[in-house]
Amino acid sequence: MFEILKQKSIPIVESLHRRIFGHEMSEEMRKFLGNLSISFFGGAFYSVLLFIVSILAGRFLGPIDYGKYALYVSLFSFFTIFLSFGLETTIIRLAAKADADMRKKIISTFIFFFFVNAIFWSLISFIFKSLIVKIFGLPVLFIFFALLFSMTNSIGMIIENYLKLLNKFLFINIIRVCQGLFLLVFLILLRFLFGEIFSLSWFIFLSVAASLLVLVVYFLKAKSYLKFILDIKTLKELLLFSSFLFLSVISGYLIQSGTVILINKFIGLRDLGLYNAYYSLSLAITGQVIGFFVAAYFPALAQSTNKVAAIKKIDKMIPIITLPWLIISSLIMFFGIKLYGTSYPLDIGIIVPFSFYSLFYLYGVLYGYIVISNASNILVRNMYAIWFLIVVGYFFVLFLLSYYLNMTVQIVLWAQVIAFGINAFLNRAYCDKIINN
Image 1: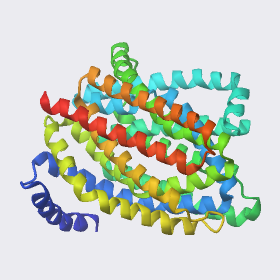
Image 2: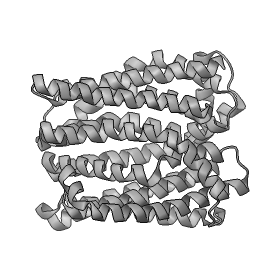
Image 3: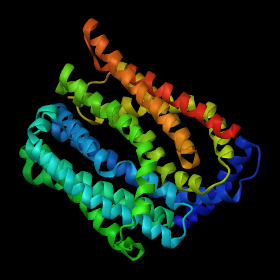
Image 4: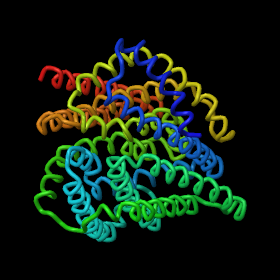
């Protein structure tokens, strides 16, 4: 069934490619689209499942607990920064052009490093648990859940990226769909069994269990590709490039999770729950499209020698998709928020900025991946240093406004839109440096 759909869609895609770009598809592009089609069909089903899970969780928990869930996501994202150190992207970049033996050495070295690093940060979390509770406003139990989820999800994503380089796209999408089904079925089952006493703790436990199961399956699939060795030279190379990416990881965390903490402190937990609902809806398309492209786009870019063609293709797509993207994103939020229930009011003042947010976020990611796929370390470092400064400026402006205005979610959102818009523009400017070189 899948192959039939794939074969029927290829002529349509080729025709669209000729109309938009004015030339026939290259072999690299055909390979990329072949992988993307697998990611698309599997990812589309997985996205629908997660969309349903997100809405049901919002309905079952209510805005206040859904706001607490946003704080929990910020907490495990915080742990992920220091556990993975941005190595998930570095591994694809370095392993893309490596031979089979070197790939085994890269992934095995990372796993060894990861477990040592995980032990260290577990101890740090235990020592400073009181401070973590104070900053995030969550119980100690949630620190344990967040740490466990960060570990299983991070190592799972690394192995998944490695499997993508081995063209195991179909296997990955089957597992992700099973994960979505697991979350949906057990979420409904727990709500049915426990009724009104169903709590955020149950939902968080469910997500941790699903992540752990995925990791076990991935590990069993990938174990034949592992060597279980630590190569110091490889580790140094991984950490060297990741040190440049670390600024990006920190910046991404601050502008999203830092915003969540800011809304909770200065606006309120209920408003944070509303923000989280609209945020989830705004990424219903953007997040998944980025997921589809990253699944095949970044590995293909890392192995490609013609980055200029990719830049020109994205340039031609932008004028075509901008207006439809804004309209579709707005409609998804307009109708989607109604599915969350009456506790989540419709607010056009939130929908409009979130539509632009999702658009600029997409553009920034697509151009950014081109730069990090094969640009020099200095260029990557400069790009992320500027992004970090943009984020610092974003928070400076928000804190300044908080002294003169009554802070609202809308003000925060428009500040985010401006920050992501500047980032997308600068990422495109860095692509020009690749073209000129």
